[in-house]
Image (tube, rainbow, N blue to C red):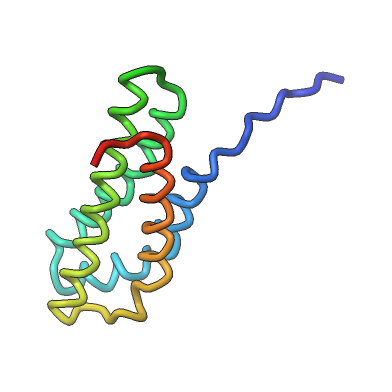
Length: 116
């Protein structure tokens, strides 16, 4: 019987996926009012996860660059959420859980050396 070596979990990546799951209904709601904003929010959320995964397997300056891009996407997603609330597409409580997770991911990215 072969045993497969488990890849260690990357908590920041796991949390970014949790944020997508928590905010998926928000993206759907925003899309009914503003397709462009919903698409930008969706792309920013995906970018966080994809750049975290790429950065986790990169080295040196490439690693920091991917984590910095992910941090920028966290900021973009959080701004898009605030814009959606400001336009009245969703409410603060609608975004609270996902926004809190993104805030945590942003803090982790800072700890991983992402530039601001």
